[in-house]
Length: 348
Image (cartoon, rainbow, N blue to C red):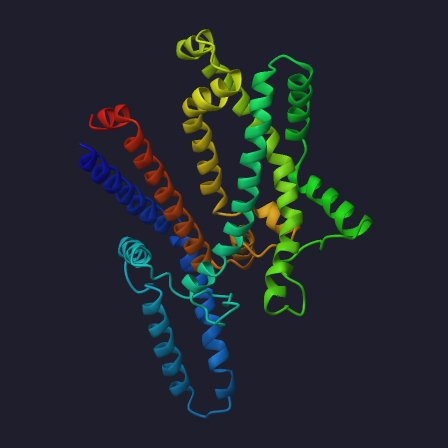
């Protein structure tokens, strides 16, 4: 039974991704065509600039036409639109994202879009995985305490703080933390991933951790209040269940009831929130990475928009979409493994 459920979920994930890729290819087609033609004409002018003193003007024109034909073929501009959309979508599905129009890889100095995106993903994963891990731990601990003393002073006070924090713009709070930690106390760098010049050896990793601290502090202080509030509501609803009442009636200590019985039932939705937050963060946060000059997926996405670099933009979106769908399928498979009811409903 689980094998059929497993295969079905994998197939649906692949089908959804294929559909989305062709949708992205269709959406970016007109923009990519306009940008590519402009780039091609610039390349042709640059290549023939030094040939203007040649007497044979016809030879220069033939060279231009040959170069234009070659580049048009490389960008699929010499085929009908529907065929161009299909070919580009097929290239993406085979992990051939082409070359960037403007950007270069910082490591290999190539224009390969795959290389540009792949070397950026670890920076985003490092930042947001660390932040979400701290977010979940603090939110879980505070949420449990709030549920234990629901309606008390701590519960009401932290709920007010949660509403206040959710009204604070992230970019503004990030600027405040930079001002406090980087300029008032001068204990943390204001931005970037590492210092200049780049340290070597163990100093490099310590330097990265030092630069990582400030954006993580900002994301955690902004995020864990809301997670604590959601945890509190989930735990409170679980505490009203009959089996929890029965456990208390049997004289089981309150600590065991909370951490043993309640948390086992409340863990799946809490874990789902954490995993979904992590999946969403794979695409990066444009504002956070921009304020802290953190070279991640969000900043790459914004740079691609500014430079009108459609291949990088499409590669960024397609890779993050693949990771997101893979995470959702994995989460669905774990739920199906743990809860037989989901497998039964999944066959309908």
